[in-house]
Structures are given as structure tokens and as C-alpha cells.
Length: 349
Ligand SMILES: NC(=O)c1ccc[n+]([C@@H]2O[C@H](COP(=O)([O-])OP(=O)(O)OC[C@H]3O[C@@H](n4cnc5c(N)ncnc54)[C@H](O)[C@@H]3O)[C@@H](O)[C@H]2O)c1
Ligand SMILES: [Zn+2]
Ligand SMILES: [Zn+2]
View 1: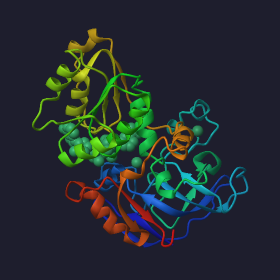
View 2: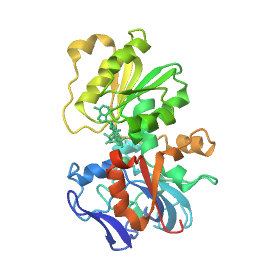
View 3: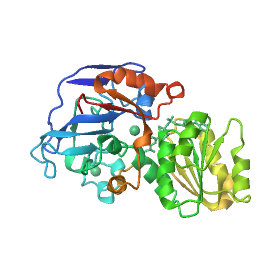
View 4: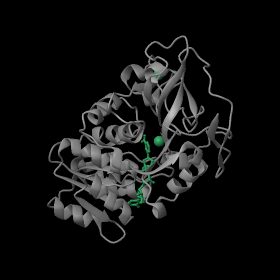
């Protein structure tokens, strides 16, 4: 079979690899019908995730068709259409019993395209397949479903639910990449009074408006603190979300929140950020962080299949699997190509 293989920082190729096969009783092999690329894959290619070793097939998001099941698989059958989640769950460890699958101690968590071969391939082996896949409801397309593999549950759980967005809240989202945009989309489910998006790129802010932000701020030309102060009578936002992953944007999210408010960090950070406790100890803040657990995936599937949530505007570019290298070029140059998420589908799929 063919797959997108990581060959060390900056190097990747769509090439022949051994076929995906069942190894453990709970495994399934899934034929990949639709797959995408995540910002995290670019971090891996940048050499930021050293646990990813040379020769690893990348990718942790897919929709596909089950082609083989191990003898221990109970819920899946060959031919089933499934969502392959970015988080794998053993289902029995202390964290899985709590729904905190991202922290799985039994061999799950974020492993696909990280610690084991991933989804950017014609076929993928999915461990603990009963707990790590979701049936695709009739009437839901592969391209609607693929956004539920990673970005929607991430933004919803780590941003909106951790931030406890309430009706009439002023919600500020720093960063309008795919994660920030998905946070706008899912914050809207709670009828906030305003959703404010902050970014450096006008193209991303235009997208933020389409996804439901009613105020957008380009922080290279406009001071977000002044805008939020005016909007809230000097109070600050009820909820701020950090969807970039830099010290400056985390510190901005903390400055923009009101006393008693919530700061939900979604970004993956590679450098220390300063928490100005000398200023904020008095503000009764709740600050949350987290890796996605994907416990909300069934809820999000319900919202998509009942047309309460439309994820399709997230996909800006479409390719065949054999065009994987071009898709990486387009996704990796988002500032020039305007890419949000790219969709790759099997020929005829
Ligand atoms: N917590 C999790 O489980 C989880 C899961 C997936 C991704 N993430 C993280 O979420 C973050 C966002 O992901 P993404 O795919 O949307 O990334 P992205 O790089 O596509 O988007 C980031 C956006 O932030 C903007 N930006 C950069 N610097 C800024 C600044 N100083 N002020 C305002 N905006 C700025 C960029 O213009 C861009 O639009 C990343 O750190 C990613 O690793 C976290
Ligand atoms: Zn991802
Ligand atoms: Zn577990």
C-alpha cells in the first residue's frame, strides 16, 4: 500500500510501505476513504515532536471502511463506515473509565501518526477499534465527518466546555486558524452575545466572520484590549480562549478576561508563558488547559447529522490520496494559499 512517511525533520514522501495488518485481538484495519492534515503534522515535520521516529506514517484523522477485524473486536463488522478518532482508547484504564481518553494509560491516547503508524495511508491499523472508532450515521458525508476526528472535539472540549461558555457571554478567541474557527462554531451553540476573533492575518479574520464571529480584530493594527474594554464597559470578556500556542497570545487571553471569568488554553506551547499572578491573583480566574479527550464526539456527531452544525466550510482544498505531497505544500503555505483544512480522498471514494 502507499502512505505518507516521515523521514526526519522537513522530509516526507508518499511511497510504498508494507500493508496494514491486524496485530492485536482488538485491532481493525480501515481502508481510508477521507483523510486530512493537521497543524500538528506540520509541527512534527518541523522536528518539534521528537517521539515521532523516522519511517512513521503520519496522520491522526480519517473516515474509512472496515476491511479486517481482530478476534477480540465485538462492535465493528467488515464493511462498516467509521470515523477514526485522533485519540485511541483502551476503554478500561483509570482515565478511560473517566472519559479522559486523551490520558489513556492502557496503550491509547494520541498514538496514531505519533507513536504508531497513522491515517495518511491507503489503510490504517486502529488498535482498541471498538472504543476508538465511531459509526458514520446515514446521510452524513465523509467530509462532514472528518472534521470530528480532531479539530471539532478539541475546540469544543478544551475551548468551549472547559471555558464554560454561557448564554449572553462575551467570548474572545485569540487565533483564527482551524482550531480557533471551530471554537467560534461551537461557542455559537451557546448563544453568546458576542464572539470576538483576534488574529494577525486578514484572510483568517474573514474566515472567522463566516464561521460566526461578529467582531474581528487584527492585532497588528488594532489594540484588542481597547476594543474589549469598550465592548464590555471596562469589565473584560467572560471567556477567552487561546488558540495559537505562544506566550504572547496566552498572556493576552489572560489580560482580556474579566474578574471571575474563564481562560481556556487550547494552544500547544513550546516555550514558557508568564502568568502574572501579581496582577491576576485578585481576579478569581479559572484557567484551564488540556489535550482533547474526544468524549464529546457522539454529541458532535448528533449535531452534524441533525444539521445543527455545518463543518463543511472548513475544507478549502481537495485532493486525491496520490496528491498527498502537493496537499502538504498547500496546507503548509496557508498564508499564501488560504488553506484552512485540506481533504484527501481515495480515488472514487
Ligand atoms: N489542546 C489540544 O488538544 C490541541 C489539539 C489540536 C491543536 N492544538 C493547538 O491549537 C493551536 C491552533 O491550531 P491551528 O491548527 O488552528 O493552528 P494555525 O497555526 O493554523 O492557526 C493559528 C492562528 O493564530 C494566528 N496567530 C499567530 N500569532 C498570533 C498572534 N500573536 N496573535 C493573534 N493571532 C496569531 C495565525 O495567524 C493563525 O491564523 C496550535 O497550537 C495547535 O497545536 C491543540
Ligand atoms: Zn491534530
Ligand atoms: Zn485507557
